Every structure is written in C-alpha cells, then in structure tokens.
Image (tube, rainbow over all chains, first blue to last red; front, top):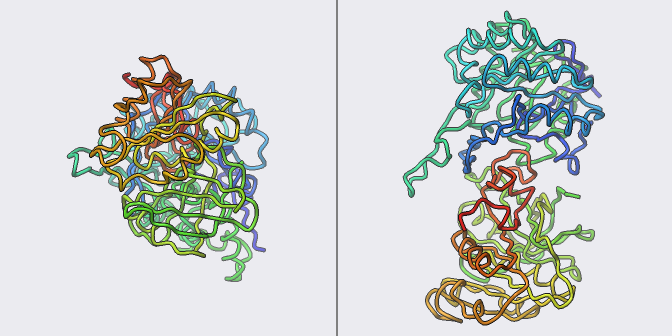
Length: 301
Length: 257
C-alpha cells in the first residue's frame, strides 16, 4: 500500500483523484454507484453570483473519442448553493471544492466571498476558461491581463485555497499561468475544454445551439499533458491536471508531467464509478513499481 | 437506488431488420424498476460510440428475472448492440429517471399512444396499469404492417388500435387521425414517439381537456442529472430530461400547443 496522499498548496487530500466541475453534479447524483469518500476531492458544478439558465438545447455532440458541450454554466446561483446544496454535502469526508465563475471581476469576487464563509469548503476553483458564455468566462482566461485582473479581485475576497482553472485556447498557457501565480493564485488546474465545432451535414447547420462548444474526453488528452508539463515547468505553485483521463495509467501520465493531483471529467459519463477505480489504480501501479509514495512520480519528466 | 452492473444477455431476438430485442438477466433478482424509466448501456467495440446509450425499459419479466430492451438500430452503437450473443455481458447504469407519474387505479381508462420505437416503454406501463385494475388501451403507429412490434404482447394487457402510414394494417394515417380518439373518451393519455407525434397528441389532449404525459428522448450524456446536456425548457426553466423526466406532464413543458 503506497502513500497516495497529496496536497495542493496545503489542502490535504487522501489521494490525488478529484472529479471535475460540471461532470459530477454535486456528488450526490453519483452516491448510489461510487463511494464519494474514496475520492480525493469533488469539484462541484460551476457556480455564479446570480442564477443562470445556460444555453439552449442541443448542448452536446458526441465526437471521435470525446464530446462537445455548450451547457453555458447553468446553475441556480451562489445563494441557492449555500442554502440548499451545501448543507447536503458539507459533512462528506472528502474535499468539496466549488468552481466559481462570473461575468465581471466584481461578480467573481462576490461569489467567492460568499463561499469563503462556508466552513467546510476549503478551496475554490476559479473558472476563467469556460468557452460557452458570452460575457466573462474564457474572455478573462485568454490574456495575462484579464486573468490577473480577475485573480487579484478574488484574492482580496477569498482567504482559503484558490485554484485557478486555465484555458488551453491560448498561445502560451505558461504565460497565463505565471500571470495567475503573480496575482496570488495558490494553484492552477488545467486544461478546461478546447473550443471546437461539429456540423450536421444533412441539416446543414451546427450540431450545437450556439455553434461552438468545448471539446473534452480522451481526444484532448495529449494536448492536456503537454499543457500540464509546460505549466509545471513555468510556475512554483502546484498544478492540478485534467483532460481526457479515463483510467489510472492516464492519471499517472499527468502526475509524471508535473501534476500534484488530477481531475476526472468526461469519463464520469462513461463509468460513473471511474474516480474511485482510478484512485485504487494509482495505488496499485505504485505498488507494482515499488514506489512508496505518489510523490516519487510527480514531475519526474 | 441506481445500480451499475454487468447483466448477462439471455436471449437476442430480431423482430425486424431495424430492431433488436435484448433479454438480459442477472444472478440475483433485478432491482425495482418503474415503467417509463430507462437504462444507460455501455457499448463495447464500437469505435465511433463514446458515450453510453439511453434505452427505455421495454418489459420486466419478474418470473424469469429478465429485463427487456427493444432497440432500434440507428447508428454504429446500436448496430453493435444488435450483434450481442447469448451469454455476453452488457454494462448497465439503471434504473434512471422518473417514469410515468401514475401507475393506475381501479377502472381508470388510460390511452397509451406509441410511434416507432416509442412503443417500447408502453408495454411495461400497460402491464403495471392492468395489474392495478386500470384499463389500458394502446394506439400504436408505424410506417407499415412490418414495422409493428410486440403486438401480441400488447394485446395481453389491453385493446390495441393501429394506424399505418401506408394503410397496410389498421387505419391509414397518423395516430392522431385514428377514429378511437373521436369515438371514445379516456381519463388520461401517455405518449412516447417522435416529437411531431407527441406535439400533435398534446394538442389533441389540450383541446379535449385530458391529462397528457409525454416521454422525451433528448440527447444525453451522463443520465444522472450531472452534465446538464439533455435539458428541456419547462415552466421551471431548463431541466434535465434524464433526471426530472423522461416523462413530463405536457403542461409543464414550454411547447407551443
């Protein structure tokens, strides 16, 4: 039994496996088929200051080894989360992390401030990389200046572990990561989805209601591994890796590329119990290779 | 309670060149399932099929511990499912969603309207209604006689009326043109089929002031209400068909009827 505990800027985790925002609801949806307390962390659905209806249907298109989505941050707002969802999940014996999004630096900061007051939420993941909303979202995450502005505003309002989720839809993800580090982020997570498009050739129109969407799944994994490797070399803060992880071997690739922890997203749709299996699988791999601790493989590349 | 399980294929039937009927079983009694609920099937060995496929529960044979899935072969994934053989395993996430809201009371007259593969969940629903003393009547629509499925099974549970587009069986035309709709009255209607058919039935129900439920089949990924991909506009805003549905009272939907 290897030591698979890890931590992200002081946030202790029993294992390096978390579930990615927008793919695991609030955890409860999966409770019948996965032991939530065997996962290192659950990152809940993107939450905004005000409720959002999201984009019109259709919001999803299956693609080769992946899928496109343009959900558009549908959620009932931070107050609904604090009053109705937080009480249901606050006593889970795992890290519950809230993904925070917004359309202005002020909105992001206010949303984060309200979550700062929740005793059992020890971290947020700041989403400056959603490709599916008109205002804010990815717009902040594609320039160093935009990223810095949002992170600085949130840093003033939020006092616990601040993870910033980065977009791969940029020229240099390492430069954005450095800007976010300078602005006070405790960690970065990457990658969010890659912007893509699919067309229904019979109807001669896009498959998604807003034409474009975010690509996820194993199709994006090599891009994600490359981004994690570049960012891990560029910053001193911890890196959380995600993008197309389907099994323990994929997770180990990200750890070797420099991630201190990983997130599982789209794979939850194929096997809703995959996160628990990957946590066990990382342990088994380490045992098989004579590693006493997961730390022995983090960033070896 | 939802389960993630490998079930065993006990029998594979091909009632039609575009359909396969899978009869699945397990070494222990199959869990509770309500009519109108569905399963998410993991398709193995189809390169172009990444996500699970949502399939409605056609029938639960408790005596033989069987779960039946009637599947229309429309793409690579469903065609792969049609190649399964007796003894193969199939991974299911089930049962999912909310089924038909009312499983019936003594003497109640319920009209179940199905078109195409939409007839599938109506067989299990008809069984439940009959078991509870209600009187299900089926109105089934198809392109032609050869496309009508499981007719003898439906007849076990209630009277069956048929429309075909070419007139090769029953009345010629669409289900909404069938004379039973003008000759008889029903306490409520449940419908599953192509959206234009469901909209037409919903209009009929509204005009005649009959309660009407529809079973939707929006494209979905997770099946658990997590990904928010399969949403339908309702009076409560966008809701997940996989979790809040697939069966909805038409009055809750933002349909133009």
